[in-house]
Image (cartoon, rainbow, N blue to C red; front, side, top):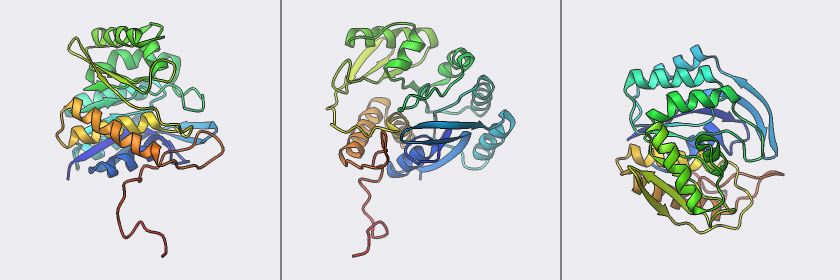
Length: 268
């Protein structure tokens, strides 16, 4: 079995962060592991508290994984401080990690800020150049590129700027204000669109975490990047289309929508 590591924050309500990553990776056929950057107190309505791991303890977690069950892919999600980002970059470089997917989480679905301002510069300088692919949504792409995105041409310009500046492949995720869930993959000076159909579901908590984790899982299994993106989009569409409805705010998706198991069935 192939393996994947998520380096991200914990979401105690289970819809995003480490919890979403582990569910997604498992459902996409790899053995999932985690290194937790922070504990959060959050639910579908917002984030009420964040307690960071120390850089030393995060280092110990990453070391414990690589020294025993080396991951075939690494997904990086919420990392709120500069020192934690430096720790991740240093450890991944030390171990020669491959198939690195960076989801530059800056704001939660419910609107809470999840990264310190000084950490963005370190993210750009030290982590993005290590990435196999970076997966910003539109607001994150604006921060990373310094450009305003209003249409698909702006998405291409922003992705090109990020790719040129930091030497990484970029998957710029479309939004309702720009297109109908179409994502742009910009690699080696070429743009490739992945078309999607918007699903009328307001419960989108953890969509970014889920997509990036699915991409990492597919890279771990040996699929090329384009195929990994396509498979990840199909998976997240299925999770949204299941129309799970939990919580009072923007609820989670059904990560296990495709689970077929006698252990998963309710009492008959």
